[in-house]
Image (cartoon, rainbow, N blue to C red; front, top):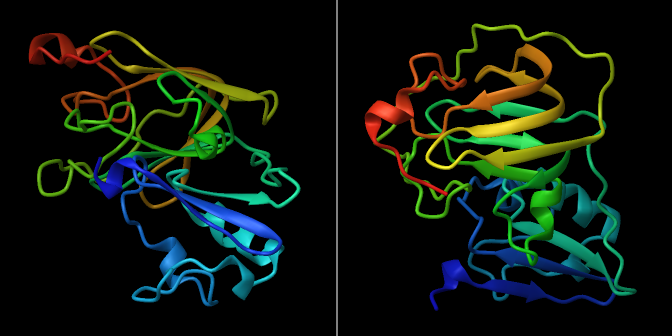
Length: 217
């Protein structure tokens, strides 16, 4: 098993940090944080005792993929869901989803994706429904969103992310969608998002997966 298929645990006196190679796409939020929790080239590169647990949690929550999680030594996990469920349609990249998430296809030992995840929308990932950076150099879409949705009466609550066989991601629950520039573009409670990379109405599905012969569970 290669390192990018493993989960590594970095221990400290008050907290432990896990890094999951199955989910990491090396965005770099952890390494660029202005503290000593993660330092590239250091062994080990993550040292939880270098910062207080609340500061470590702040860095962990910046990770957009759920690859990094934190546990206190009493066994509790202090992270809670964002008040608002959101999808950000990244520039030439994945769907960054945050909130109270229930993602079909997430393994039981992926606690981070209950709150944060990067979902494939190019159709090329080998780790669907999660992104594995296969979009790089292959997929072009700058994250524009034209539709506005039906609106919301509330925020929060569980957002379920299902998968239509050989088809789109099916989202149900209170949700906002942000375009690639961060604008809140869409609000609603139900949508089908393209994951084949072929829709002419990205990020929404337009049925192009059928003609493209897209296959995925």
